Length: 306
Image (cartoon, rainbow, N blue to C red; front, side):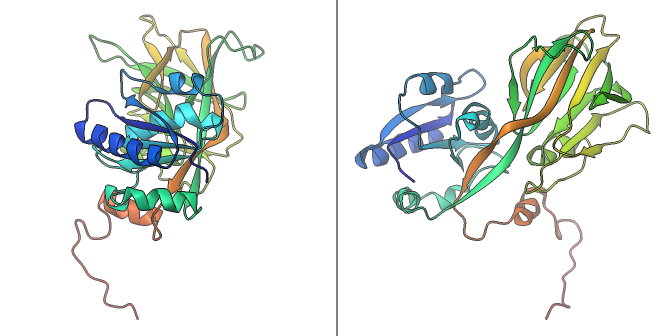
């Protein structure tokens, strides 16, 4: 890997993350690298400015924060094929990020990157757009939205809890109607986020699949379903008199959806690329640590291994 031009994004409002960003910038500039640095958060999106201000390719994005910071980087940078090194500085669970322990010797990290001694994990993403009228209308009325974790269709109201009534089609065929809190359409990466909280399936990120999970449905027969990656999931809001239905991408508001409109969700044309520094990386180890599996509640030992 070359390190001629690098983005450094730090978690907005987190002093420790900013200090690490400044340290990384000094070290990379000492190597002759051009650095673009800025905060990333709910009210800060530095990536459009970064991408518009460069002429050559960006070799790497160093993202210092939590999973939310990493998700924002993936949504904004993956279409350009920019690899992301996400480090947990000021985050919480850290499903998507490298531990700070593996990044403390940052000089050594730059050496490893220059010598191509790292792994790249590709993770499937979703894209969505809204359409007016029936299924014969294939001209989108909105921008195209991207998500690494999930697209979610549910109401957004400031003054009351609203029940949503949604109809779902898969590849043009009506599958179910849901009355409840909403509908989650997730990637394998997102299966351990909002989806698992809604009792959806956990899917290994090495797979390509789409998980559709209803949120608190009023019908016990409405169950999660796992689809092949080539499927197109269409969601129509029904009986939405207050026009509160929204499309959310990784928990961030994308757009409103009114009755008579639909949102089509499908696999994106590109994947997110995350750099892995750990030699002993294991997805199942991540599940054990983050979800506290394997003895968190049942304190028995396995004494039968050879």
